[in-house]
Length: 318
Image (tube, rainbow, N blue to C red; front, side, top):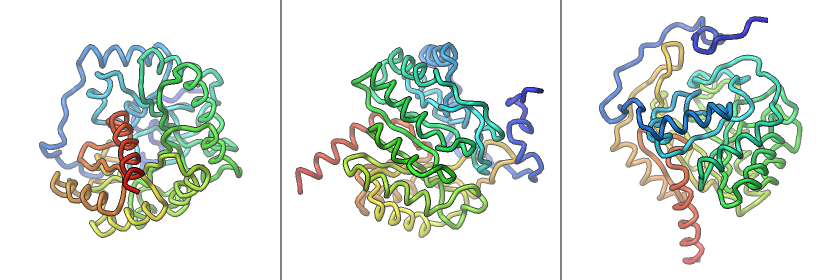
């Protein structure tokens, strides 16, 4: 059996290999970042390599990797580095994943303890090949971190468990993460071209169901802009999220990983992002992060502290 070389675009994204190239427009000044070079960045990278851990920071090509890793912050990506979905915006490799590593939860917990993380974000590839979509692996990872680093707060960014057996979502909720994040990614009208393997209202229902299972658990979701949506569509997603009692919304600029990925429709200005932030707070979100470089896990620890304070302030006013 020949191993895939995930550094080769056609092997990393076989489902995109025959797509026509999409022009990649020049990035505006407000979303350019410097290449990572700091000692802190290298120390975090070396620790992750030593523990054979994947991160969404690298696999998805996050523009904030230099800043976050220099501060010892990284978003762990469990269950391998090959996803069973083929979303047109995403740079994570697509194909048939390998079997789960039973020792991975322990290695993640070790890295969290070694990095001294006060807040950790755990995400994963989609695993439609597993009966429970990887829910039990998430739960094991949460419990392992609780054991090694009981003072750390834990945020999970999960798949949609669309093809999983009943009870998958409950398995993760019962492990008691502090924040449960699942991204809607875009407006419903763009799902067929951007997120063809997912269903908008299924994802929305997941987030609503979390609150039914545990009303005290913080919920979070995010979307990208610049994919072809309009302002009214974004505002409607905000309303849908609030109807599902979601606490925290993130909004960031979509950046095209390669010519084979979904095209950038436009670069949304910082002023428009500020308008989205104002609108979201007006609709009742406890916490909003809306900037060109916002990503689900960007400044997640600081944001969690602010989210908790916002809830306490709201309860104090009640």
